[in-house]
Length: 456
Image (cartoon, rainbow, N blue to C red):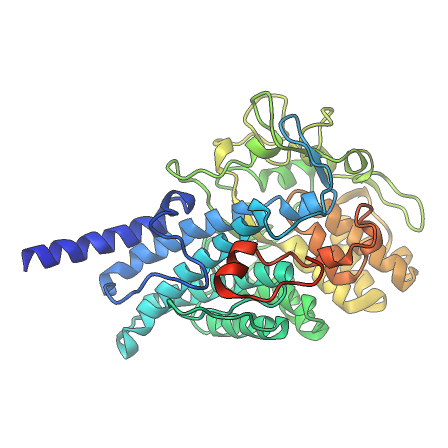
């Protein structure tokens, strides 16, 4: 009896440890993919709070792992003092980062699935709090499938921890599962109270993004508008350079943040500054010459926009640094962070809701929405009349340019290009449109016999 109890507790401790500390540190014990996963039969009601804590920690690992990926592939970044970027859009099935993204995502999905199953196993005995944890897990599962489908297209859909090999679903089926998870999450999650935890408003923000990506403009408008006009007054756009910069400091209470991961564990750090603004001699990424020179430039045609307030929070006189993520060294960022290592991993911001709504509305209805947003971003913003006079292509150019400015360094740009079909904005693509889908990692293809995406 004593030996059995010790073994059971040891097994539980190993599972919880792998969920709550750095993902890669557990790779030998928890090397999960769509072919293998941890059984949850030994987990009970008392494990659920620890599973939740582990889930949030794992999501930090998963999201930070590919944080700068879309900015690199979208030509926002070039190699910094410690790294060389030759062909930013190029990739192949044997690339280590392609495999890392895939495996990291499925480890995150498995973490969410374990929590979902653990709550489901309680049946009608699950409390409202436990059900809310399940709602959080459904949100995270949807978020990770979103990150998978926009990269790889159709991927295996795993809805429970399993040892079975699961083949790729279609892209449409993955999008449908994402929407299903988000709808289910909303029925379990409470209203916003803290930007560091999943809330109903965080779910709505992701729904707005998903509906825009799948062409459902009406729902994209509905969910984005619900955040813009949230009656509690807890969300508001930043109005100056300093308040914009403060969003990226440790423990930020900015009203623009809808949901972020705290990223404040001293045992499991994810250092933004070490990627783009290090205090050491080298770092991997610098702004590309084009973005450093042109990203925040003033414009006089087809409309006037002067004095972008975001520029001082993103770039300095040093063309090799991105100061958006502070490093704590005087003179090398705008807002000073109390703990530079603990830059929040921001998932949803109010600015995105304005841009989603304006894009989905189109120029005739969206000009007022867009003008309201632009008023907070420029010293001399465009007038509503000048925005309303734009042609449809000019209006799309304006929104894409604003998204590139707004979310520079936040992992949006490559997919903005892909979903709008604006491959003309990728100068290094050179007709290689197959690169708009990532290759299925060769190791995973060999293990499960997955079909490969065309072109690889």
